[in-house]
Length: 240
Length: 261
Image 1: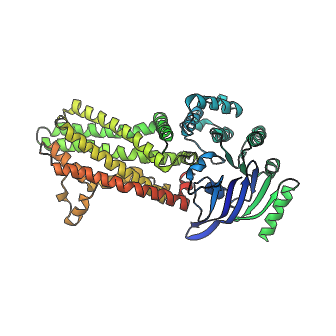
Image 2: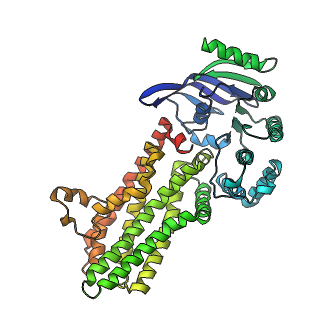
Image 3: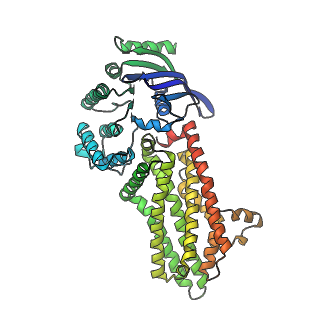
């Protein structure tokens, strides 16, 4: 079964009176159990696509299905998704522990279950020393680790990873990549990964799509592909 | 609507309210100092224009109650927007109905607590007994005010979601014009004739008129009492579809994403 299906999705925005396509006739699918990489330069439409998949945006044309269910018709299906993004922010006045308590309640976890899950995630992401620290006192890396931990709080069936290791220490990035792979192998969790680090996509993704000016230009298996060469070739081809 | 998510949001509001001190100041400090000021004015007026002093004090209590019952919900939404947490909430399965419903409950608790403080203070510091003599009528007047403010907060939230967060200033400014046109300290007849029909459909006009009459020791107009409640309920019923429409529109235009970024 396809975990995510994006069918002929188009999205236009109006900026300063001019309309432009952020996404144009985008189709892709993520198979159950695979990590799907999405590569593209800044402003190519990667985050717009993720926002449509998670239901923050409605496509002008086309549709998105999660496990066969249309996101627009069945918005509750998005509860099975977990999102990790670079711009993940939490209220500055809350402590790390408050964030876990709040989202645990949102996901309907009982108190004991919530505490158990919090302890597991805090331990894994090395957040023990900042558990009672306010969000405004965390470093960029700590905030990103918190975002990742929060996304895993509900054991999501699909993970959307929007530049998940951006701004992290190399050691944490390595650990996170291992965990991404581990979650994928252990639980078969399908993932959509956008990243600027080609090596990261190479290491993690099974397939990769190249997106440019809102259009999917190509989709390939990552195995045996020299991603850097491929990326540069795609940019050059499309700029020409 | 899932009850665990509504409880989670109320819990979140309690956490933020207790940790972010400016919120406490915003919701309690200004109303309390304002009512003390006008309470002192009413004490001064007692010797030569007792009704005028009482009208100003009582209507100030209504005004502050109305303001907090509206602004707390909208300030919470703006706080979620400024802090970026609204995106985290909406991508965690929280629905727009749960989001606003929880905020209305939190705001009702805060504004009723404030009302209790203002009434207790006015009774003990300024001997304001008149509005306690008919508790049933007073309760209906405050209930109408609360419902109208909840409706206003939903409409303002809808506008901010549709128009963008740069309109967040409406959270603490827009009610002023509705209060002014609802004729708090003066009768509708003081407005120019062309404006008078418009003031009668304002959310608080009927309620304020009865509150003035009550403060001056006059009779309560029962049909006006019901009118005040009915107008508030109409505003509430109209506000809900507007809110849901604005959310859908914001998902289409991308303003919902911008609200959280």
